[in-house]
Length: 259
Image 1: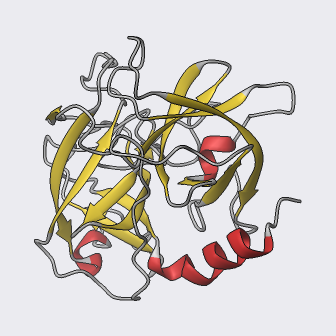
Image 2: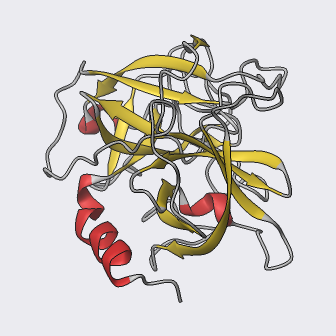
């Protein structure tokens, strides 16, 4: 997202803190209906939520590469599925260990390009009404400006840094990339591999990074970066475009590129 505080803006902090651009929360949204997003994942390091993710297969979760910045082999990396509340017991919850992480080779702590990663779980998840994958957009296209898409997450919900215990949701309109790249906004930093959304008082924020931008029941984007101050209308939320990386995703999952 932006420099360090927003979901819709896709500026999630990731596991280690702010990157060169602010990274991912949901500001100005509302509590989601419990278990209405069965593909939502909470990526956790040592038992603490750090980022969102999307279940895309029985064994794989899609997230942002910057969420893995600072995570070491000594850390316990897990994915929580089927959750509405992060803290309360819920029969639907499934907590899975991560076997391996496949980061896009072009990603890095000081880069906003190629901000995508796949997390392979140690075992298949149990699919059902509370846990199910969401299809990925495989048609490379630019969404029409004004198209309404959903984002969800457990990221910061206030400028004071308050974190919710239950899943939040927000509907945001797509912004034209050329407009997003105007000097008053992101000044040319948004590439063809990224998607912008309007962020006037409604945005993703810290802790939302890695979560999905869902348009028409497919994953179109991944919360990536945005504004230092979530909800700043001058700094639209920015997402990694999933369709651009469809071949890399398929190859990674099919070839099991786990290093």
